Length: 379
Image (cartoon, rainbow, N blue to C red; front, side):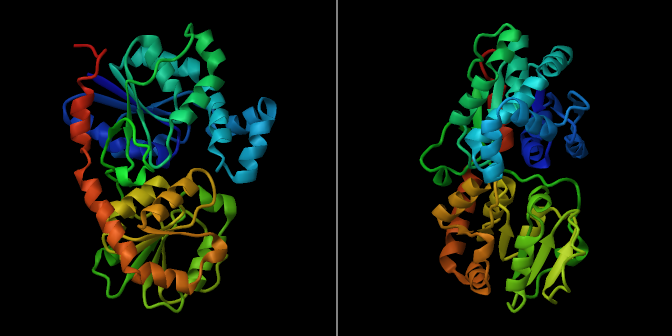
């Protein structure tokens, strides 16, 4: 069987697909991943990568659609930094429409028997429908997507009609990574254990060594720092200076040269495999990316979520409401807040409970095996 995985061009969208794609390949199936410009880093996982619509920029097309077609939605997106998901995803639908012909052509050429796509990329559902194969939606975290999918498909109605489809069918299944106790009573579809994939980089030797005192992993992701600058990192550094703990800044390519001299207990690093780093830590601080949060929960660590937009407020609320961590604004960052993160036993206990819950969720291999039995698959 041939299985095509598809998603938005970004590590936060494509890397969560890797564990299931590898599991499919481990069962002997042929697997490939497709995305637009910017999706190339997923190829480092060893999975074949098929470029879709080279030269078409996801972010440029969203802005263009907002300016020329839906300025009402664009104003809401700008005002909330994309936290208004019911405004953002219809704009994302216009990018899907812009690459619809290319997606259909790629699917017709590669001839998958099954398509698995993350929820912001329903053009893959269109392509699967055109060639007559089932498609499975792969959700990414704590966002409940049925209403958002409905909004995206409504925005793409003209594109469906152009391809001879009155209305797209529902996906054959929806995969949910959220632990049930954190889904707000709104679980749907099939569970998949969130197995973190952070690329092929090894943990630096100095970080792999046992920590001599509490260590806190800190990241603001790959996109947020470019949007809002260093404000939250600066506040974390200031609050951490007098605490008896080490803070590891996993900052990727973020330029820290504008920062003042760092305290002795704050250690900057570039790209660090987040899940491996967490195994050496007592707590985590991050921007609210679903992978960052799920990895911290998998490790059983309390976390401080500092959301700034997109779906990150939803992540922060899920962590806070479960009692597995804290959620705060930049202005609320203080030594007392970081001390609570390190010392509140209730936070640690809830985080360990969710870690145990995650361990009971179906593995990627188990889900891959089940997907091979979906109705409509070629024998």
